[in-house]
Image 1 (cartoon, each protein chain N blue to C red):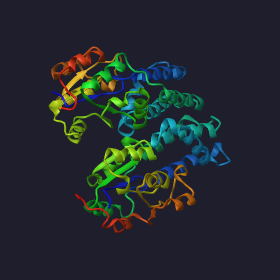
Image 2 (image 1 turned 45 degrees about the vertical axis):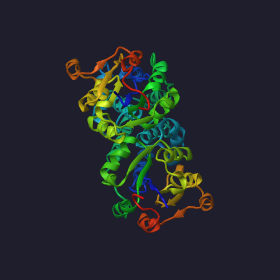
Image 3 (image 1 turned 135 degrees about the vertical axis):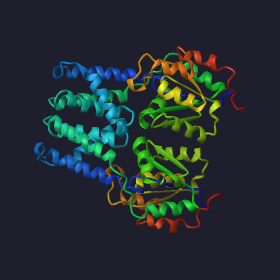
Image 4 (image 1 turned 180 degrees about the vertical axis):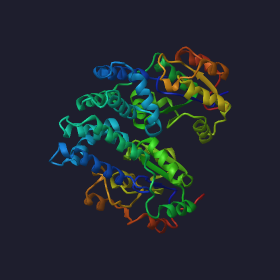
Length: 235
Length: 235
């Protein structure tokens, strides 16, 4: 039996990584005249990893890392007007309407009818609250936790806070690294629903996954059948 | 009687606005060759207000607004290397050690001995969690709420969440606009502890303050005497 189902947000309920990928593509084009080797993606990832400790996750940190990468990749030849274009791309990302993934609109209310749900997402507080409000899904979640990272320790603290035994907790998400493996490690249940894009930072090798013992579903539309009978609201 | 005391963080427990002011001063110096009118402060504030809906509060949004202001104020003549300097200043801010304000180190443990405490702060999730962890004050707070804004509605939702009647809630902070007036409006108690610097966005006119009916203390060292007998832990 399960007390509560944790659900990730970005790339589990709504589209996120394609926004980043599209912006990165446009910045690569912007940098083409300065950078004939075309390795902007690698340079950006390197900058992001170096800045992660200070910036955390989210679009604003991504924007600052893009600007820094543009300066470096162009050997400081990039023009102020082009940097303003990068800022404008980041603003477009922040202002982009939430795009629910397939099945989400039907699945979340259906799950909420029989299970208690908690949204567990990392990233920028304001971005995530705005997206949740826009999504129309907020009423189906009993709790919302926007965390700075998704580690074993942070999941453990959440389970203590809500007094949920790990073996009665199920976490669903697109990231093995953030949504599935730490929960399985704690003794909980993990359901992995892959998204067609995975940020390199979230990727893990297939071997690690196979050994961990979690469920993999092709899409979130299959989740209600998987959890059927596992949780009963109000019990 | 009071059930719980809410305490603001930035410029109430630790220094914050001076970091912003110092960085702004350094960016103004950087822009001097491009901008003989010296109105960087005004231009920056205007940019920040325009971007607030998208960026929210915090150092990363401030950094992006500084870069945008630098581009505009310099008529796009600013160099990439100078923009990198602005990014470096933002990183210094993010990496700056927490400086507790006078009396805080003694006052918070003393208060926690007789009152339940909740930290209520806005800003960037990661920044605030890092500062709280560094401050050594985390063990004294029963709850921590990092909110995207401090409006009447957001305070109301917090009081509902923790089942606190407004008249049994006391909020302490340096910002009349964010910490005191919305709580007083809800029927709670407000204690204003001014800081020597106030961001223009947080300023309210003295008339509004005088009419609202809240307490003003010169420094946080006076808070234990003010709340003495108002709350008893565990009752």
